[in-house]
Image 1: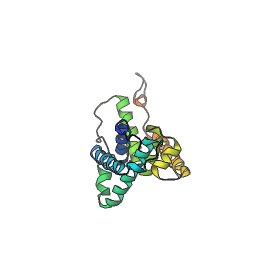
Image 2 (image 1 turned 90 degrees about the vertical axis):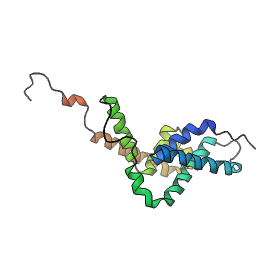
Image 3 (image 1 turned 180 degrees about the vertical axis):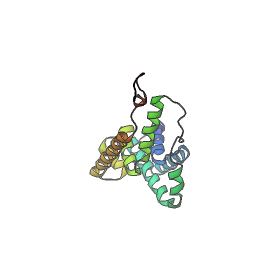
Image 4 (image 1 turned 45 degrees about the horizontal axis):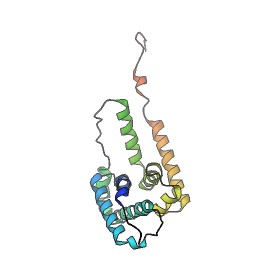
Length: 173
């Protein structure tokens, strides 16, 4: 049996789980559950296969299973879904911009957020991401396209940079 070494994959698994759950505690629980499943099913891993994609697929499936069993908690998850509160602790423009991007990403529907995370953050190919998500390649590409379009439209709706708040001394307007 091939060596089943997952330690190097923990960062990817945690990032993906946090992207899916939007909560660090739930993400750790999800990774734990996925690792238990992976260990129990380690015999199904194909020798020479992509271990990371296989583990991310298990994280994805464990998440879907939890979502199906927690329909009554959906409102709580939605309300607690943001990493930051409404206030912005640092006035620097880059901190504000990062908070806006994070909020826009987490406001995407789960399917779009998941697809974009796997490709843009985890660096999986479209095919690997489609396999991990359990959807056809075209479906994954469509979700990524819709996610990118949604982020672009959110970007255009954001207020312009601080320069619009400045005015030239002596300018009557």
